Image (cartoon, rainbow, N blue to C red; front, side, top):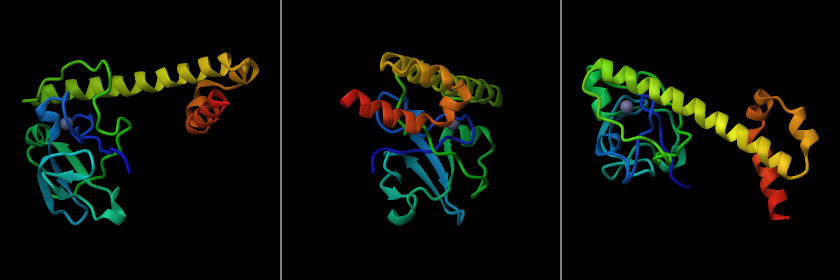
Length: 169
Ligand SMILES: [Zn+2]
């Protein structure tokens, strides 16, 4: 299994591993379902400062995940509260992401939340535009025109695989 991560319940950005993400995005607090907590550096493979978050057979079990900085601003919530979503960026810094400052106040956190929401939206739109372009390029304009954005979004994975197979052929 490759890199994977969860989105922070505070700011919405993923728990990061490695440079070039800032240290605060790599310093995390995670609560397991049984409410035991781990804190330290995330390694991108489900471990916090060397300790596995979940057993290998249940590696994606739900956790409440935070950047430590966000967790502090939220008043250091104890134990498992709600599941973090699995990160679409796998915990790797997306290209072109601006340097994000460590949140110190609720207001900082709200600002980060807005940015992560906008970034996710943009990423989605971008890949929909990409799929449409590829479909057109591969001489499938009819097929491209037939799909609405919402349908493209719903079928993204299947279409991506299909486009990849055509590109290889
Ligand atoms: Zn956060």
